[in-house]
Image 1 (cartoon, rainbow, N blue to C red):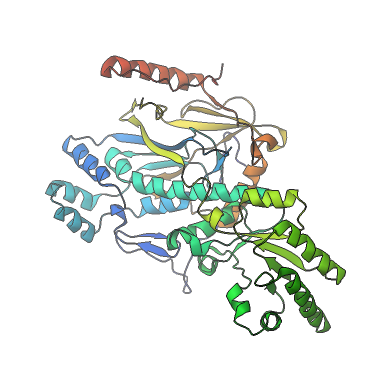
Image 2: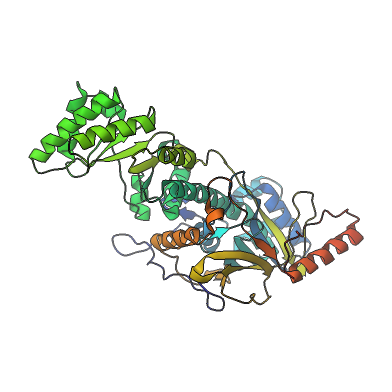
Length: 500
């Protein structure tokens, strides 16, 4: 991990290329995410971003603005989040522009002056992005990224930036919990058919892989992300044959080295004995059945019965793969009851983050034209100014706690990791994107470095985040200024956990 003074990101892999070695190029005004292309992507925004931008231009407001993206508070039961989505954000900003079709549509709304539309025609993102690397564990109030750019640019990209970071952070955080629950047993991402659309399905596979899932059922994710696709069989396959054992035999004939037989189409215990017969037939040909799958019923009882039957037949090498409505809670419960499960296929509940389908995440202005700004709304107050997050490390690189500070503040004494790193300047990427495997390894190291009591899935301790005295002093001064100038009663933001 990066240390204070020389924070570095792992060496990235080469950008993806086609068979002729050429990078795919987006058409003017388009944004590519994985295999999907969004035309006129600059219009992927809320209308009020456009109206604010038009007003800024009319008022001559073109000064630099810093917006900070952070989570205010976490869903119930969550003790940490895993940041994700940065690669998409940087690609979106790099290719940001208004196409002729986009400008024609805006003109048809009869809302905007021709001068504003002409301004948009020439507009490109020219700002700076400071962000935590994908795979970083983060906590409330800590910026996942800060964007500094002329205020029109920084304002117009708010919707897309928040959308891309929010969704992928949500899914990666959920997947990390499932991986933790499984221990060292493989987790396979299985939820494509019930994700909220094609884009969500692609991002779910990528997020789960970052979080530590070993593979995915998503074949397209295999092509575009290099995630090895894996699959078994469906109940429809079994029921399409006259007899269950006919389906088993047909499948192992087609895939003798990696066959997984689905046992619960009819009677699981009876199907297990049929699987034993097929496995013995394979042994006679010098082959081995890889695994069997359970997808319903009393998983703990059935898995024990299946394991016993397999072991009695001398098939201890055949693994038990379980799927069907799983999440971290059911995985943890099954293993706590001693279920002899070797791997988990986790789908819908992970890929839609069923227990916590959204995060209280925001993208807020914290500085304009050199002037720190705050918001004092009850329950939605913000910290002023550009910031840095310093992570304190114990021996062995275990995390001891974080300090949220002003950007220009020096690091606290001791071994410190600097979280926010400059990844884009003047609208240009400073380095190619890291390889997905590099992000995955970094994420695993981050989660492993959490204190044990913070990493718990239930009743976890609160990770210590302190606020520098300089940040707190600035915040108090800003609150007093707002109260004096705007007459607003102040709901104090600064917590008690400040540095001396």
